[in-house]
Amino acid sequence: MLAEAGGPNAVTIEAVARRAGVGKQTIYRWWAGRGPLLMEVYETLVPAEAVADAQTDLRAMLVWLFKRYRSGPAGEILAALLADMRSDRALADEFRRRFLVEREAVTATLIRRTLTADPTRAALAARVVVAMVWYRLLVEPDRLDDALADDIVRIIEGVTA
Image 1 (cartoon, rainbow, N blue to C red):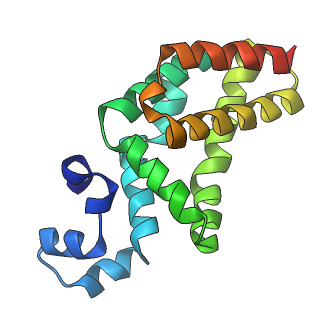
Image 2 (cartoon, one colour):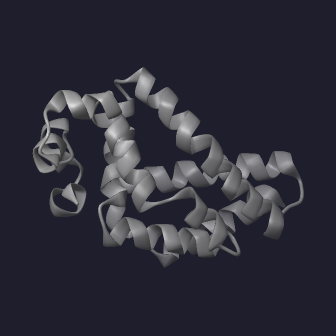
Image 3 (cartoon, rainbow, N blue to C red):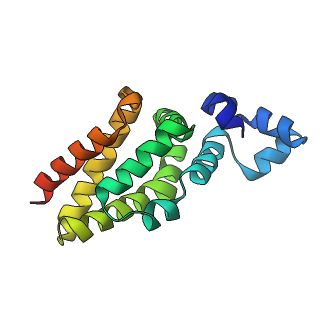
């Protein structure tokens, strides 16, 4: 996979076309640009079902996610998408529709299951979790670890109490 070999910068329309042995226009029929292409790659690396199905609580989900981010290109790809979204409103809207709403809901479900039955508090807590993870991903990706998962759970316990 291009992303595993060279990170998100290696995932370009040109590189995909070259690897597939087709023209760039063929690739543009499937993806409007680099952003939607990176979203597709991210979905393959961190499928929503895996996030939802394999986790029993918030900490387990965070530990699983952080391991994915540290052991492959998923974290770098998400960071690249977040950076690209600052200047591409359409990409931000599609990302929100395809990923953010669903994954915040998964996180809120885990929080409701283990920390609070209040759906409003769980939804707020899920947004806090996403913000904390994205901040760390952008600023200190090497510190996406079990200690951060523990810190986030402690903070969320306070938010939901």
